Image 1 (cartoon, rainbow, N blue to C red):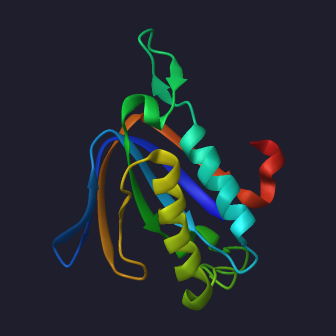
Image 2 (image 1 turned 90 degrees about the vertical axis):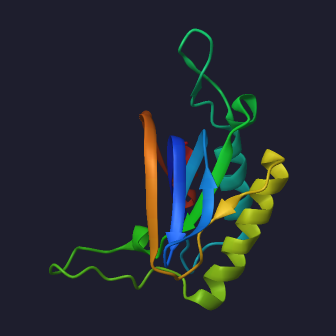
Amino acid sequence: MRAVIQRVSEAVCKVDGNVTGQIETGLLILLGIEDADTDEDLQWLAQKICGLRIFADENGLMNKALADVDGGILLISQFTLFAQTKKGNRPSFIRAARPDKAIPLYEKMIIKLEELSGKKVAAGIFGADMKISLTNDGPVTIIMNTKDKDNY
């Protein structure tokens, strides 16, 4: 799994002009799932995300986690995080999991993030043409890959 995690002061997802998910202070998470991903990857990533201390404390230092700031989560599925661009100019998405594998893991991620954060997770619609608006706070953007756990 790959995740692009952005600290935001607000974020909203719309599909066909309708809001499917919206948060104020919190994390916008773009989640890519590949065929090799497992429940173990999901558990590890969810715990890392919820434990990230990337919110400012009273001294302006990044010492607070999501729960410390009563932050929300907006989770968006994004298969393009597995784009391969080695050959030519048209990306290949061969490594991205097909919906029959990706949808159950995406739905499990929502549940796990809700368990860990203690809050309902806002989300996009898997496979839909989504319009995401956000205000990146900082900016703070972190990329995580479960196949490279030793670097996190």
